[in-house]
Image (cartoon, rainbow, N blue to C red; front, side, top):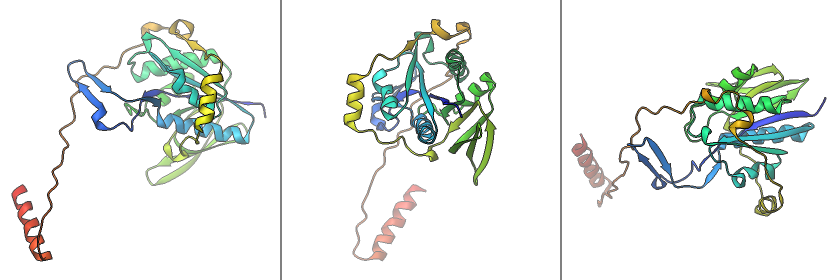
Length: 264
């Protein structure tokens, strides 16, 4: 079998593990402001881990694509440190706050520019807006068979064999390659990358290719911004904690009942 060509789509987002205190909402501008470090979307890290496991079993080349208005090569070099072979940054002011259809369209153009591929992997959804649409739309645009919510991926006889999540377990699905698979968190977290290896990658790596919309987007007029109708802050979730004293369990229970009575 020839060398397998795998493309992994990886989105850069603010750290979804950031505390609520680092998140604010500007209702007037309809913007969510997150004062947190940028990271690779966790579901896309699952997709990269799935690609690396395939590479451990078969001859494969992994190319990582990341699209956005500004994409940090420092953040995305993590994919190279983990074992990917190539990283391409797709960055342009035109890519700011795009809707899912436009993101998929831009990624499809970039993948067509790359040309030779057997398998495209994306996360099941992004870790910021959680729409879960881009991978499926991308497959349709590329004319590829698509399997979503993968928990395990194998390559057999020029086909991709996937264990796909369903509500009560999983089902096994096969598709001829080239194909697209959206990867779920059951695959497992991206492997550990030592700090030493990451620092070596940051200091010694060559420049990363960066494409603007002029380099690959076929129809910029088809790029549309995400339309947010209304955006508001979440309700105040503060909690009050009160300790109920009592000599006996019965006395404590009576006080607890009294508190519930006041809440009715």
